[in-house]
Amino acid sequence: MKKIFLILLLGLFVFTGCSKYNESSIKNDLNKNINNIKGYHLVGKLDVYNGDNTYRYKVESSYYKDKYRVSLINKKNNHEQILLKNDDAVYVLNPNLNKSYKFQSRWPENSSQIYILQSLLGDINNDKDMNLIKKKDSYIIETKLAYSNNKDLVKEKIYLNKNLDFEKIEVYDENNNLQMKLIIKELDKRAVFNNNYFDVDENMNTGEEETKETISTIDDTIYPMYLPSGTYLSSEEEVSKSDGERIILTFSGETPFIMVQETVNRDKEVMSVSGDPEFITDTVGAISDNSIEFISNGVEYYISSENMNSHEMMQVAESLSPIAVMK
Image 1 (tube, rainbow, N blue to C red):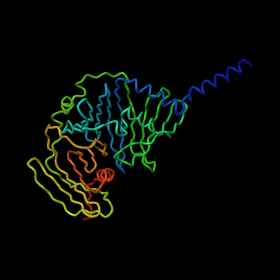
Image 2: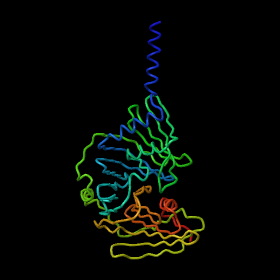
Image 3: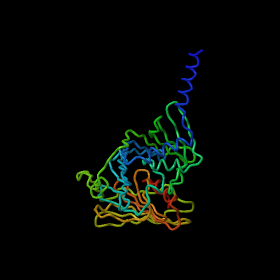
Image 4: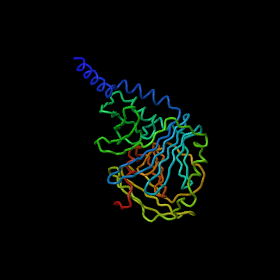
């Protein structure tokens, strides 16, 4: 009889040990765990899906004393972009192009960020209806998302082990299609960094001189495959620059806009831009209420419209293709 009682007691302990959290208690422990971290360094593999295309990145995300640094290396062309927040401002750095943008932005607090622990915690805290799925030795948290400029991204799945360490994050659209996936390979929650690690000049010097990208001509005009209803390409103009080429596409109709694509002017001057940094398939750009700026494959793009919102401009930017559209 004693043996049976001990077996039942052990079974009860194992069961409750694997399923000890509910929605409230897991939030409490995650808040304690993450808010007590003074510095961390995360290494992961990020896949971004756009139709039939998959963009793969090596990600390194660092945090220390309210400073952030996120390195995104495109595995196809080895191009690195760095999102940086220090005491001065927020920056998007392109070391291989000697190009950098400066923002007066609340990033990363103002939008969901898949590779920043505090942002993941914010998504969990902000969703009163979050769903907790209990596995044998792990947990999955399903939450709503707050991507301010990309309304297509609506749901997130956060995979945790039994110690509540983040292992994988998935982002879905409203049709339950997977849009982004981050697999965390390493996470040091006791990382320490010096101030130079978050310095703009130090980070801009990370690109090897022999690998710095130089493009002087645009071989193929890139066209948006998505256009708002009643909008069409009305003119295309090529302009020569002293250091390259510029193509201006004008779209007319119900929702007019202008798209400029040009070879990048490789200088070290920091450009101040309005808006916030935003992931645009294979790059990080700057998005505001009526414009988007970003660099992709050595070409700089600028989209501007007084008639489109930021979500519509994101749809245009993410649909770019060398295939011509009808005028």
